[in-house]
Image 1 (cartoon, rainbow, N blue to C red):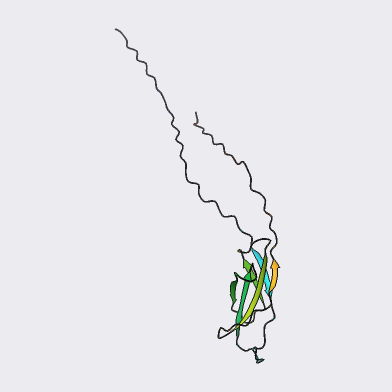
Image 2 (image 1 turned 120 degrees about the vertical axis):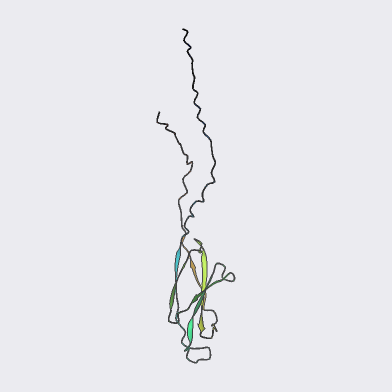
Length: 142
């Protein structure tokens, strides 16, 4: 009897497919928040000299230019003589101009107060890391 010997060669192939995924959005870098403390002396009279009995609050305005681009914040507290402005829209190392108005119950506001100025501090941040690399290996357990 003749024996037939059959040789079987198994070829295993490993296919690695490269898939490019869209990078997820990076978290936003938090912007510095500056605390600006404004104080004033509340008015006690109207322009005609009569007692001011219907003070409703104040309007605080601030600007980078001092003559345009004013942002207005309502302070609806007639007893307030101070307001802390915590805005994260202020830029570092920038001069800002501030003014205030008193408003009565009828919504009539005074002329603008004197203009006060202040400069936000310069914020120095470190540079980001450079040449970031990654090395990914595969361990098939063989």
